[in-house]
Length: 122
Image (cartoon, rainbow, N blue to C red):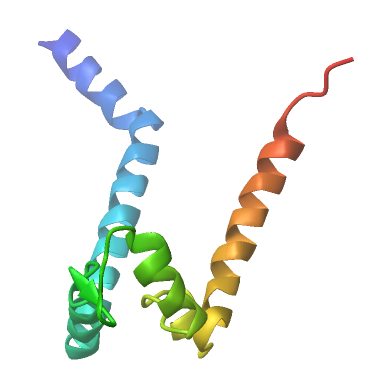
């Protein structure tokens, strides 16, 4: 019995499990904040997701032509006109092709981080 009591006391004094508990509480707090933010924004978040869901696939016919190559006959003409799918640039207030600048900057940062992270061959 005293051996069991000693084991329980040593387990209670052990501080290794505290890190896991702290991380679990932190994750729970972040989840509650995220759920609260989405709940508070409610309608606007639904509008954003609905606008993304409403974006079209290439039509069968576009401007009087049957679409056989969606990239050159549909996507690029719309892109030239500034009709760009909803993205992060729109939320920054950019319009037209300028909305793609944050995407290009992020891609450039990823490439730079990848290139700089590689060990150099000698």
